[in-house]
Image (cartoon, rainbow, N blue to C red):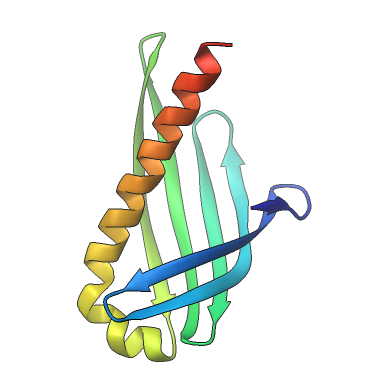
Amino acid sequence: MEEDGPDRYRIHSMVIMGPVNGLFDGHISLKDTIPPKSFVLAMEQKSKMGNVTAEITIQLDQNGSTDTTIRYAGEARLSGLLSRMGQRVLGGVLNSLTKQFFAAFKQYLESNNHH
């Protein structure tokens, strides 16, 4: 991920969906930010196997002085081979990517709390 402007980042990722995998290039940006309560994560990625656009609304609810509940909901649109293959396995892939994100996010928060 590389900064590409205010609240905008260029992203490169490898996604594997069953027998199909591909390298994706695109952008991710933050919009409709209401610090520290919510924001929308907008993503656009392109690859040889198709394109993905998504918008995910993130809400942060502070519970006391140290705990925060993160709620999210979104919609993704697929095209190309992704749309033909992806509908069957998309739920599992999204679940896996979400778990990976929150594990990495937790690790990041824990490592920064020790400095």
